[in-house]
Length: 212
Ligand code: SF4
Image (cartoon, rainbow, N blue to C red):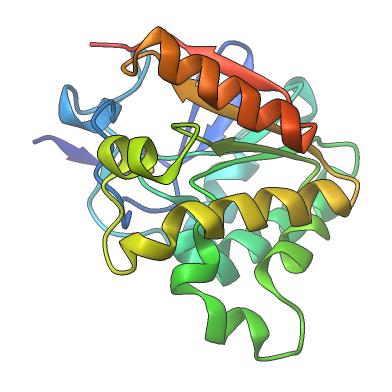
């Protein structure tokens, strides 16, 4: 496994931010299983999680106005560093007020950040909606059984699917742009069930091809 301090990288014209390698899931399709990077990037396994100063220095070397979207994605689940993510998003808003910020997430932040999120009386969805424009949430299946098989959530597996759905509903209710994703490692019937679930919530679904 190669490690580096690749804190940002370009894909499809957008800028992706890599703030953590931690994740409470083990998705069967996770790109981290097959490579050290993503879409030709330098290694995304971090030597250490970046400090705020390291992240700001990395961003300062970029022309942030050049990217249609700046995406918190990473080689891990960005909301594992909820407070850090929000501080970096605020920083980007300060230095590049026109930036469009997207979060790619498993939507499980309430499973592992509840206390931190609620310390000031606002939950994670509220905090994130204050700084993030668009959300891409891993639906991964039309029901909890398929979801658990694909996602392998650790810690509170019985609550994971409903937690993710609640997060998606909260983000949508807050008026933010949100979409679900599934990867085609599930059967056509299971994709159809995921589509029905997404339709019932009024959230568009993107079916992504599995990348070896
Ligand atoms: S949530 Fe994302 S980083 Fe975590 S295992 Fe799944 S695909 Fe990989």
